[in-house]
Structures are given as structure tokens and as C-alpha cells.
Image 1: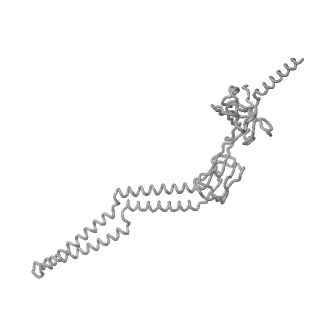
Image 2: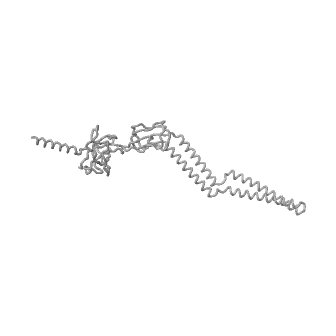
Image 3: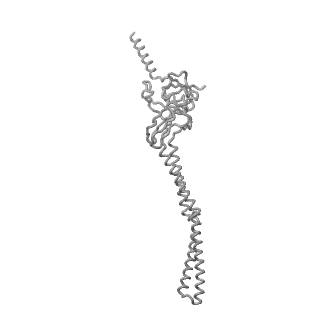
Length: 320
């Protein structure tokens, strides 16, 4: 009788041990989102917020704006600098302004008139000298005066010719480089001004707003987080013994608390490296067991039913 009781007890222990080692039918996992974090490249005060937390936004929709005063001033200065450099280049390419040329032409006419008078005076003095009515000194003074007046005419002619010509090629090329540099600075200032406003890069849910008007976030610090529907995924862990049941493209059923029905998803990634059970799915049955992480993407019609952070149970659907 005692031996029979001992046998029954040992059989019970064996059954209990087998139940403890058996893998559960459903695989444990959870839902998570790959968030898009938006930030400003500058440290400036937030001026205006155009959306609310939990709101669905469309691609290109305005989300948040920083104070623009400094950026707008920088753009205005850059635009004026471009105009100034372009005007200087135009002057170098076309020569002196018309008013300056007209002034040189007037000086030239006056010099020609003076030279003409000096020539007539020289001819008169020459006749008087031949008639021995004036001295050699007087004739030479008239001759020297005519030479000087004639030289002044030549000088003004050369000045007019130079002023009508464009600047030297090296000076023009240098100024062209200055114009290009000014244009680049203007474009950079315009880009800086545009970066004061955040726009949605895709259709998404405003998951969180980290800074509000009046606050001053540091440069490159996230201010808004977005969650696009196609960035919601399901992560679960597969024991080595069950790796043969799944592959990329395998359909799974997702069961979650509060869901009116099971959800469908397709596996899109299986980790090539084993890992210990993460704390989020830790249990006495899986303690110290190596698992392989897998990810799945819900089908489009089930995306609205998936909430990030939900614990879920995964059922692998057999091929039909």
C-alpha cells in the first residue's frame, strides 16, 4: 500500500515538472512606437504653438514657431549687402557713371579752348619775334604755354578713355566672388529664418509637446514628438524551440486586454542574436531563458486599435 502511494506521488511530481517546463501556447510581447522627435537648430524662445497634444496632423502642417526677430533682421542685412555688392560690380563692369564722364568731358572742352588760344598767341608772338618786335623770352613763354595747354588736353583725353573702360579683369572677378559670397550669406539667413518654424514631416499623431510658448529650449533639444501610424510596431520574444514556426512575412494574431477582437500583423524582422527575457515580459516560466526578439507590423485596418505600451499575447497563424 505504501509503495503504491509513493508511485502515485512520484508520478504527480513528474507531471508537475513537465508542466513547468512546457512552453506557453502564446508568445509574450508588447506594442511600441518609433517616435519622430522634432527640434530647432537654435536656442530661442518659443513664440507660438499651433497644435495640441493628441491632435492628428497632416504632412506640411505648421506645428510650432520660435521668435523671428533676430533672424528677420539678419536676412534684411544680408539682402542689403547683396544689393550693395551687385551695384559695385555693375560699376566696375560699365566704367564711371555718366555724370563723372560728363565732368571730364567739360574739363576737356575747356582745355581745348585754352590750347586753341595758346596756339593763336604763339603764332602772334612768332610773327612779332620775326619782326623783332618782341624779345626771345616773350616768344619762348608763349611757346611753353601752348605746349602745357596741349599736354593738358592729351591728359584729359586719356582720363576720359580710362573712365569709359570697365575695371581690370582681376578686380571684376574679385567683385564677382564677393557678390557670390553675399548671395550665399543671404540664402543662409533665409534658411535660418525658415528653421524658426516647425512643420510636420508626415501625417502623424502629436504624441507629446515638451516645450510651450515662453520657454527657451536648447538647440537640437526635442520640443515635439510625433507618432506616425506606420511607425507603430509589435515586439515579442520567441524561444529557440519555436523559431522554426516563424519567418519574415509570417502572419500572427495579436491578443490584448480590452480588445474586442484579435488583431492581425505580419512579422517584418527577426533578431539574429539571442537575449535574456526583458523585464517587461519577465515571468518565472521564462526566467534565465534565451529568446529571440521579433517585430511585426499591424495590418492597416487594425492600426487605429493598437496603443503603444500595451502588453500583448502573440499567436502564430499556421499556413493555410
